[in-house]
Image (cartoon, each protein chain N blue to C red):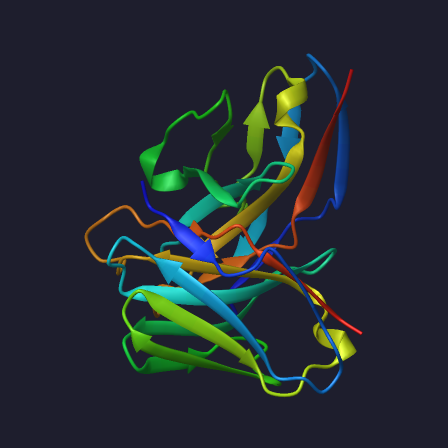
Length: 115
Length: 109
């Protein structure tokens, strides 16, 4: 079974702090994703990485950055946390889509509260 | 523009009644569509994909290209079907998935 793990289930940070959210997958997937999940807004893509050291902006990258130094690990960084970044953050991974049934596998989520 | 629309935020259905969760999409080309589900305190997971034409946990979804719809259906709702359901579309340019805003399904006893 694919396993995607996230470093924390719950996190409370203060406004202005630098925040690191870590995601690790154990299935050698090329693609990794960071979403935020908000009631009434669904899942919105923050950043996407299709290979080590490669990254692409998603729909809402402002205020976030990412790091992918190793294939299995994808980190989301909030440079200076703000209250509007209070949310549930979901990490996902997948194989490249060509030639196979496509599926993204999700982690359990990190609920971040910024006070 | 590629877009997924789920018109209902909340759907309440009595146990044993039929369920239909609506999904419409906007896409140029041949779409690849999915339903994802998130049960309480569990991670988001794939329920079914249209290319597999499968039935999972009694749910089916048929792609209607004329109406650009991919509604999720189940003939007889069960209490364990209560969850958040997301319709999703795979981008034609890369491996990104575009999610709808979700419908919370509440099965009434």
